[in-house]
Length: 159
Image: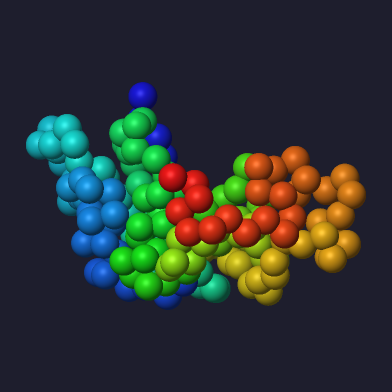
């Protein structure tokens, strides 16, 4: 069984991301454009990194991630290595809600305005997920998450 990971990074060039991904994952990272399935080492991870418009415009897709490799510590390691904030989708299925992973490993839920474009989703207007905001109170999807409003998990809490 393999996994697919989708992340966003705050302003890192793809050329910086590939070596940092290899170090964070402890695996060989093959860019999707040059990966040959017939010659791919069993321990390699195939990744695609590209620039999109909007905030957190560096997009990362990792394909065929081994099942035993934990996602949150991996993205926390990437954030630290790049010294950039990273985003991943949370568990609510709300398109605008993500987990923000800071370079120090701190994890917190955040919201964005999402606009669909021909180039994919564009994020803007970041705000913390907090019960002081009407959209995060009461019966909102935020309360069904492992990462409830106002959650701030200390460094590498997800490990």
